[in-house]
Length: 196
Image 1 (cartoon, rainbow, N blue to C red):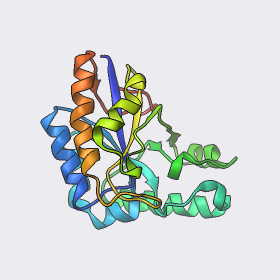
Image 2 (cartoon, rainbow, N blue to C red):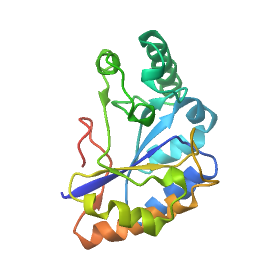
Image 3 (cartoon, helix red, strand yellow):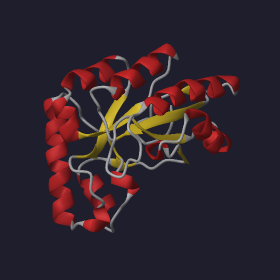
Image 4 (cartoon, rainbow, N blue to C red):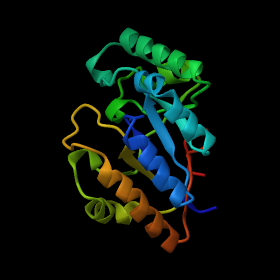
């Protein structure tokens, strides 16, 4: 199956993640959510809905801090706290997208020790800046092909310059229409980080 993956970081958000889920459901699409575990623990019903609707819920962090800004011990502690919070929700992540995609020399080793695979992206919507959905599609269209991994945000993380995630919700619809026009499904990431 030819497909691309929409991925969402920095949620779940009580208001915006359900709207992203509504948009995905309307498009018959599935996605991958890299969650901030402390937020997931505060919004268990949103997480449960994402799982029930066929989306993947994976690890982002517990505290949204760059690996390169801290030491290995701190990052190990953060990952373990996050994994424990997610385990309490019945989530067993296989994939890990570090905050900002930032890695230190030890990040891959930490991931491997926890049975996780580090995941990046190939197309960045820059939705955190507040770009509108049409601009996001224009900026990413050349990279929306079979196997593409698209970075979006369903929550307002550190550094966000927008007041809400409304344009990300709109982008889901635009991306789905664009993908359909090219014979591509919107599918979650596989255990190995590939699409489909």
